[in-house]
Length: 207
Ligand SMILES: [Zn+2]
Image 1 (spheres, rainbow, N blue to C red):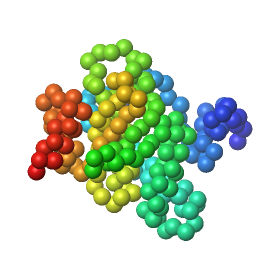
Image 2 (image 1 turned 90 degrees about the vertical axis):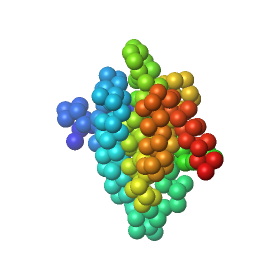
Image 3 (image 1 turned 120 degrees about the vertical axis):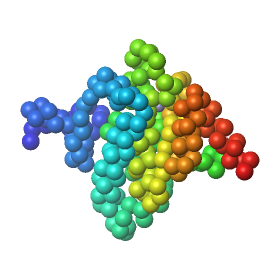
Image 4 (image 1 turned 30 degrees about the horizontal axis):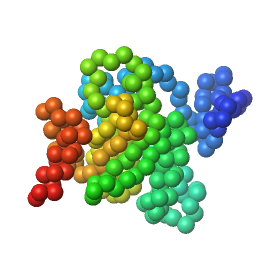
């Protein structure tokens, strides 16, 4: 196939078929910022979360194939040490233009920090009309799905702070469905995500 390399990205582009491929051969798609803004809120947070969740499942299978190639001693990606998984995952995502990821433990809670979320960038650049404080529910679903698959646990996720509200990066709580649902319920009663999380954290600390 005739294709040209896209400068500095490692991606190759075939002008006739309009296919863009990563160095590993995965097909990717170029989208504009309207598409990304659309992904942040088509009718509430539930739809992007579910889209992200489905994408995470697919990504898990793809990463599984990649990890078996790169680490011949493992039988499944779950055998990888967490730092190795994190590196593989973050490098793959950043190559696709989805930012970089870091798993962090803060006061007994597990967080995933996402740097350079294109969703947040698109929302920040778009005109503000009743935009909620966080914009990356798509990532929340995605992270819940991929970390559930790699840990074998049933995890949920919610964005607590977003770079679209002037934080340096987006930060997602990764926890079981009950805890995440408690945070969601408070947000439903007009708490900001960070306030909601802090309240739940304080209540759990008092138990
Ligand atoms: Zn965000």
